[in-house]
Figure 1: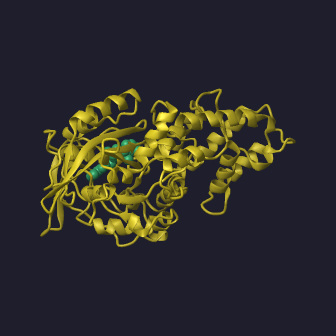
Figure 2 (figure 1 turned 90 degrees about the horizontal axis):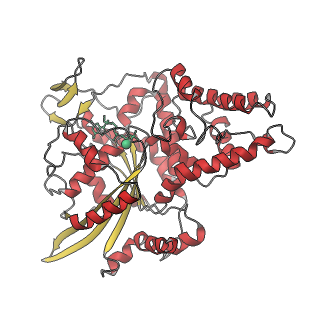
Figure 3 (figure 1 turned 60 degrees about the vertical axis):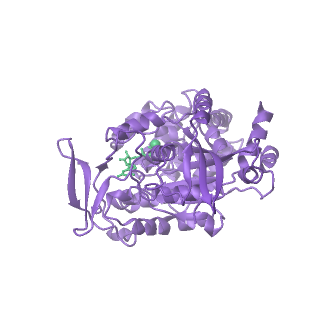
Length: 485
Ligand SMILES: Nc1nc2c(ncn2[C@@H]2O[C@H](COP(=O)(O)OP(=O)(O)OP(=O)(O)O)[C@@H](O)[C@H]2O)c(=O)[nH]1
Ligand SMILES: [Mg+2]
């Protein structure tokens, strides 16, 4: 079975071969896309909308550059049955149902894949061109992205990484140093106290808006329980009952370099922590990373409007989070004709992302200023994206409203959208929205809450064959499908 999988990977990874030999064996091109970004940035809404657009393609409202997408329902049945067996089926119908009710889909609790088989058809000089595509898109809870820092790192390397990330000069709050110092005062029998100290560190960083905390189960439990969004005390209470690992007897915490020497009183803990760490990585993040290692492109979501609203500290935290997430995708293979075989020889955790699109989302919450949102996303993440070593033409910044919720009134520079009133009702209202700034504000005068945007709700048709209005979603998909001009 493993061997068959490898062969299968060769096929799906080399989509160009599929294009060259348009025969039965290589008929289907597989395009694998990772959606990434912190929680609440709009990944699931995006995915639901893409599913809808490709299942019911209307070239007038979803511009695929002259191509028509024809959904393949026969193939779909097989694909969905397979995905269901693997337990990783993106619950498209459920997510769409929310939108049809004028609500947003629920928060993602576990990772899943939306698979859409379709044919792209275009008439060129009287000749019909066709491409049969199986598009696979990964949805994951934003919290889990933090765990990518564990991929390819042993327990001791993760400890080293923690020290650099939280104890180094840049971005260090001092809490990690305090934690390590307090740890040194504990004897070898005080392991529970050590775990309690790490929890204290997590609470401090949580109050610092740090998104990169690992293991991510402290934010989102294994079975999908989200930790309270509330005060320091509430988070601390939540953590009291949360093991730092897969279970009470499978906990691990980071130790300092000195603890790895045999003379350290904490040396005896290392074996257990190592075991618990490996089990955690193997169970929680390795399967996601393995899926990602065969992806062709990456869409990175950033909620620029929310960042403006939440101030400099959250902005910095989000930027660090993106650095951490994208670092995984830097390790690229040499461009050889059969990368599948190279995978086999070199291990799976080497990626082959050949394009990245950074997407500032929810552009429908402002008055037509997607270009400014792009500028902000660019100034925030351009340097991070550049370190990935992709050609310039393989990177893009495109703003988007995956589900457009507002109408624009040009004369009055206002929008009209469905919003929730103080008494909880949803009503359609016209109002003016403040401008998106040209640049990120200086941190010295960046007041939290100074930029406020309305929470708008989808105006959606219940009819399944009428996909939602969108902005920029089609431009993004043109790039993913490599049909941009
Ligand atoms: N106005 C508007 N709001 C959106 C749009 N997309 C997402 N939102 C808002 O953002 C919230 C989060 O969107 P999701 O798609 O669930 O975010 P996510 O990235 O999947 O979040 P996690 O599952 O927590 O990782 C939604 O509940 C909406 O309130 C959009 O296109 N327009
Ligand atoms: Mg989600």
